Image: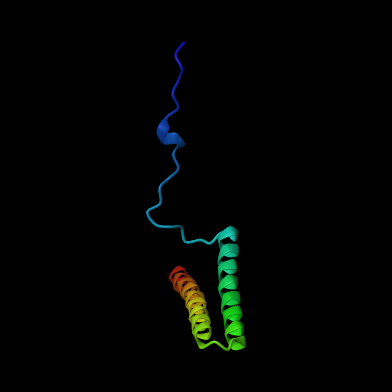
Length: 88
């Protein structure tokens, strides 16, 4: 008896050239978490820097604070740019 081979092209999912212009609930929750993590990192580093006497540690904590703020702003900027593109 001859077994039939399933058609390979029927089982393949389409390949997108660009990501879809939609944010799923899971995507939204992850983006929200990323913003929260960076905001919390910013706040903790800023608080810790205010508690330190050693200026080298203060400088390192302020540098970490600025990094978290930069990441937070970059995520927001990316969301705003893509939101504006979707509305056009």
